[in-house]
Length: 103
Image (tube, rainbow, N blue to C red):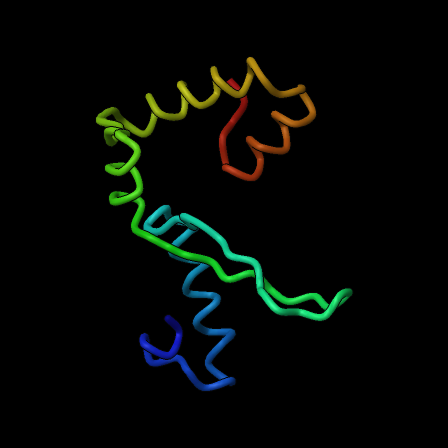
């Protein structure tokens, strides 16, 4: 995929990887699968290969409809769900990372 996108050179790898992270960070793409390296000698380690697809396509395949509400409504729903399943310390860390003020 990197070569097809024009980032095949070794020195382009970091830029390409940063681009993938940016696309994942804004939910434009998601990792839809991974595959472990085959044929490695015992004890050898290699990175898995990842498969990506657009978030819209992934949601369609799984029957998930896009959220039609406002950002504030989404924040309230997310906060309510997290409060049911996370400790206060975890909530604090999650809210800080997401830029959400505790409700």
